[in-house]
Length: 236
Ligand code: ATP
Image (tube, rainbow, N blue to C red):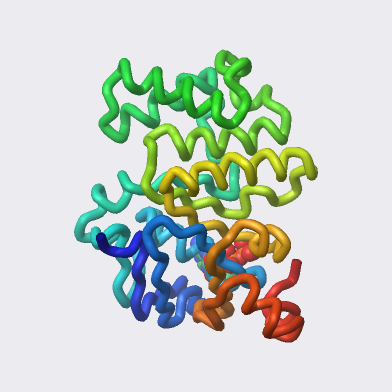
């Protein structure tokens, strides 16, 4: 089985800005992998290249062996993404948003309904299934973003700062849900500014800065390297 993610010499330029500058990274299948780095390090750009939202300007990127551009659908269907921003259709009840998403990924109508219910139960907002996204509280919106990522039953779950600004109780709830998913075999890529979160959840952590890899280590190794590595590269 190929790794969940493999990128080599990955580059992305936005005009004069070099957002990714020769990034090399491998995320093993089944791992819980953390991606850390200061604001502007290139974390979201990296994710956007993987899911096909932006085109790379150089290098190679694949998801479970599928090239993210040449075999876009293969790569995209393997990924469930919970992005930072709430880019959700606000005109439908949330269960319908999930049906649409599952349908878009080729899931049958009957299965879509089942999967939507399972995803909403998993994150604890099944009782809100007939409500529109805008009417959810901030915490429930975060839960919904995770449910939406799960509805296609992805092999790779990508979470872009899923616990930014949430209270302790919700953070712990979300940790539990994603830890269970990882135990069941889902590979997780998590970006975060919270070192405590990375230490608690991740098998391995990559620190990137200015679009390049600084280090890959286990959380214990990072702690051993001492505060220098962490304070230089994290601004949490
Ligand atoms: P944060 O932790 O703040 O979310 P990040 O590590 O996710 O940051 P990116 O959002 O990938 O970093 O940004 C990397 C660089 O690319 C930054 O300099 C950013 O300003 C720039 N950038 C990102 N998107 C665009 C865009 N659409 N057009 C121009 N520049 C962009």
